[in-house]
Length: 135
Image 1 (cartoon, rainbow, N blue to C red):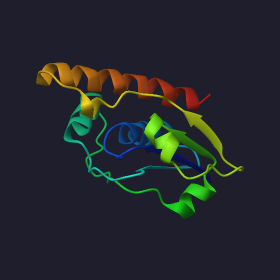
Image 2: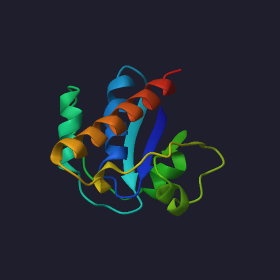
Image 3: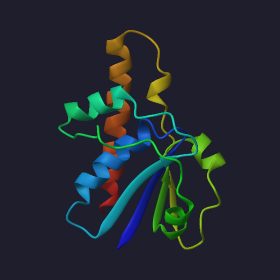
């Protein structure tokens, strides 16, 4: 079984969204998908809402710290922000590493509509990246 890990700073938005899409897209393949953070900030309700708009329920996912055992067994590790890339443990030589430098939608300010628009754009970018992993 292949192992895929999405890592961002607080495992609240970007990595959670990536986990949700990867679980959907890789559902019929022999792939285990997880997400984690270098810290835990809890699952962001706006991430849950923006994924629900695309028909994906991530509400049962949890905000987790990096599991060193799983991390060291991964075939692919994807960091979704510079902070995670910089603070992430050393990537094992047996793992492939991709870095998607995505803005943190949780840091967006403005009206609720403006904030959700940024969440939607980040979600769409992540969805596109995850779909590319299928190739």
